Length: 63
Image (cartoon, rainbow, N blue to C red):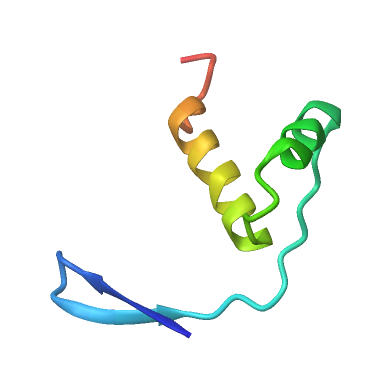
């Protein structure tokens, strides 16, 4: 279990995620398969999370 430090609260915290289901469309599956072989599945998932945080700001398109 990895511990991280939260600078806002000044506390250490840890998270343990056991199972994650990832559903990819055809284009996402292509990107997943092209990620370096040395990446673990956790690193691949982190790559996708970071990508969507950067590219899909989480806002509503209708606003």
